[in-house]
Picture 1 (spheres, rainbow, N blue to C red):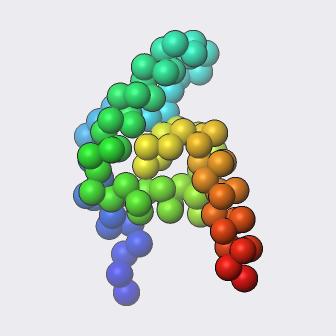
Picture 2 (cartoon, helix red, strand yellow):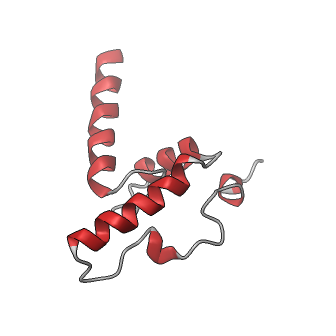
Length: 89
């Protein structure tokens, strides 16, 4: 059986500071915007971005940047996928 976590070993974020993807408590909006842009730039070059997004949507992960999507963007993507799934049914 294939390990479902092996995609994480190929992630571009390996070795990066977790604070870049999961901001500190009390972070100001301007600081958050800068941090998220940096995290998203790493995600944009990631070979397993799709797997990361799928993982974060299936969990669902409530915090952080996953596959280049922040919390609000993941909520929107989750709703979009649900609508698409219902339309296909």
